[in-house]
Each structure stands twice: as structure tokens, then as C-alpha cells.
Length: 256
Length: 325
Image (spheres, each protein chain N blue to C red):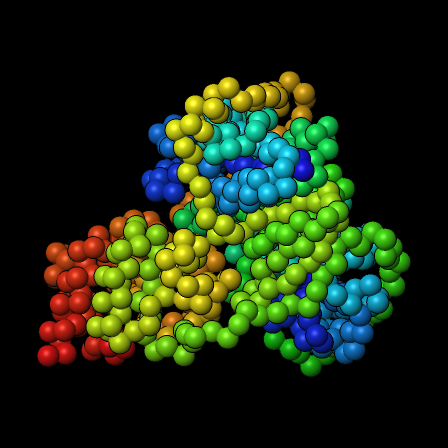
């Protein structure tokens, strides 16, 4: 089975975010980047399906030069090869523009299965996978907790709201967006990291193809949200803070 | 020209998030000076379109077809595409449910549009529709402004817009006939189900101590357990903790876990991604302890402590014991 996994590189979770001088995005120069967490789970699922059914896992990433490190990490974990769609520094595609780039890179690969994370931790629009399926003319299922290969098709477990689930059968080829936590993530081994160095990564220059990679409706401004509730911030040593909090919870809020 | 709200139903009941969508849609259609229309898809819709028509809707479309009996992205997309091509709205709105997330992006793609998803606010200014979305799991907001001419698709976050109230006058109800191709519906969904009976019912807990990524390691959960015991609280967690298998899924609070409304909710090391907030923002009193002063959890908390939970929690246990002594 040929499996494509689409991954995105996003600012690391503990990043301190600062607004860029033009107010339209964050200052990226002093940030660390990592694989988008739901995409790490998509990769894990792809590796496990391949290990059981045979075949290859191709990791595809649209991102600037720096995204190379995320592709290498995926190769170190066991992906067989990579495709890097290189975006110019500062490009800000929306989900549709990204999906179009991914679709043109994936088209010629004719995969049996495409996996993506269900959403990105930065933009969080949660739709690149679904749009990609539509562009490629493939059936999809989203927010998937379990994947079972059944001969010519798949049986998957979708997460619904409020503790509900649903099984869906799909023919292959198909696209799935994977929920975080579907399997336990593996770490790259030293051997894996060594092997990754010799695995092939095809580089596609997004700008050279004349592709559009800007959002149709771009972000005008980013800013911290306003507080909707009046909050009391408690300050002091841990002991002082704890004493104030217990006092307030007992006699002000009366909930302790 | 119109604003079209596509509502969700299951088993003959309208999803109540749809009323919030109608509330937001009414505001935008008023500002744009165009009628508000609604659509409901399904098989055997009964009086659901009549129900919807009472909520400030000029026209409610009943899109009834046997192939829409069970939700499929392929079936719903075909049907809504035909409705939109025929009725030509300039703005199509959805409640941001798991179902909308599964098919609204596909529908927008058919029109060369990119869905503006999970919108928390919207306004019309200078001939533009400006949508507000959250970025970085709620740490930031972003304004995304589109010309009000042309076609846009957006989905509205739960709890972000005031629900429409039913009025005396009901709008018109119209059946919209669609031609659907059974062969183009590729997925075969089964009936939704719930996992086996839960052993913890967080929804009835009076007090909850919840932990997130800030707890760092599994072994540190003991500290949270001690605090919960001292407070007479149930222990709960945000999604990453349950994903790691550190606590069972039934202790997860949020959109994919339990929805809770205790008297006291103490969140330790939880940044407050929207998926978590929707599960607990109904709590009477919310306490947030987090090392990041910019964490979105502080936006909905009543009491906040910016600090190291590994220092604050033990001090809190001491103080509670003192107070009880």
C-alpha cells in the first residue's frame, strides 16, 4: 500500500508569540518549529498501516526552507521518502491554497491512502485534508480514531461530539484526517536518524510553477483576545497565593 | 442575494447550535440588507423547516431526499451545491460542528472558496465582512476581511453568537428538490454509538481539579490527585493527558470528552484551547494556575495565578488542610 502523509511545521508549543511589526502575523525569526501534533499522529498511523500491510510511506510537506527538519524527522521515524514543496519565506497560504499545492504534488503519485492531521496548531482551520480529498476526487472521513484495512477498502472509527463515535466504510483510494491520540507516538532511533540522511527528498519550488500560495481572504490583523470575564489575578509567594485563593473560594465564591 | 444558514438535524431534532448560527446570520443579513434564509437537509424532515422559519428566517428550504437519510459528506455536498447554485446566497453559514467540519470545506471548494472556519465574531464594515477567528489554540485572534460582494463560506463557533429567539411571524417554507447520484456517495456510515458505560460521571461532580500538559510527567499526577482529595474534587484532564494514556478517556473534559458545569473548576497547567473550554466554561467558578500569563484559560477564569503549579499546588493543599482543621 502506498500511503501519503501530509505534515505541517508549526511554532513549538511553548513558544512565546510576538506580533510582527506589520500586525499581520507573528514574528518568526526567534521561534523554534516542530511537527504539527495531529500530523505526528497521522504519520504514526501511516507507519503502522505500512508495517502491517507492506508498501511505502511518503511524507509531503508544504513550507519554507526550515520545514526540511520536519521532513527529516518523519524519515527518521520510518517514512520512506519525502516531498518538500518549498514556499517562499513569509508566504501565508490558506487551507485551499495549501491543499492545491499538495494536490499537484500528490497527483502523480497515485497513492492508495492519504493521511493528514485533523487540524494545525497554528491556523487551526481544520480543513486542509478535506479540501485535498475534494481536489483529488477522493472519498474522505474526518477525525478518525481507528483505521482497519479491509481488502479493497477501509473501515474507520470517526469521533463525533460528546462521546459518540461512528464506523464508516470507505473504498480505496481515500483520505483520512487523523485525531490526536490514535496510537502511541514512536521516537526516532539513532539508527533511524542515520538512515534518514540517505532517504530521498524531492524538492518542488512552489514559486517556480507559478502556483498561487496566498490566501484568497488574507489575515488583516492579529491581536490578543479580550477578556470576557473580570478576573482577579492573585500574586505573591506560593504560600500567599494559596492562602488568598482558599480565602476567596471559601468566603467570596463559596465553593470550597 | 441572501445569507444562507445551513442547519443541522439528527433524528428529527434541530442541533441547538443552529439557533446560534441563525442569531449570527440574522445580524449579518441585517447589516448587509439582504434576507436571511435557512436550509435543512435530510429525509423526512417533517415540520423542522417550519420550526426554523420562526427564528427570523425569511425563507426556509426543506432539502428532503432519501439519499440524505444518513449524513454523508458526498450526499450533503451534492445537495447543498445545487441549492447554492439555484439560490445564489452571498454568505453561507454553518454551526462549527464535527459534521460541518466534515463537509463544509468540501462544499466551499466546489465554489473555489476557502471556508472561514470556527468564527467567533463577525461584523460588516466599509463594504467588507470581517470575521474573527482564533489562532494558536485561542492564544490570538485574527481579523479576516472579505469583500461583501461575491460568495463566502464560514462556520460559527459554539457559544460565540447569541442564539436567535423564536418570533410570532414565521417565514416562508419551500421544498427544494435535488437530484442526487447514489453512485457518487462513496462512504457507508453505520449508526453512531457510545462507548461502554462510564465509571466516572464528571458532569455531576461539584468540584473538579483538571490537569493539562503543564503537569509534564505522569508521576506528577499524584500531586493533582492529592489536591483533588483535599478539595473533595474529581480529577479530570484536557485531551493531551488522556491521549498519553495517563488518565482514562472518561476523565477528559472538552468537545470530544465530557461537558461539565461544576461549582468549582480548578485548571492546572491547562492553556485553554477552545476544544477544552467548550467543555467547562459553564462552571460557576473557574480557577486557572498556569505559568504562561498569555494562556487563553485566563480569559474565562474568575481567579488566576501565573506561576509554577509544582509550587502553588502543594501550598494550596497545605492551606486547605489548615482551613479544614
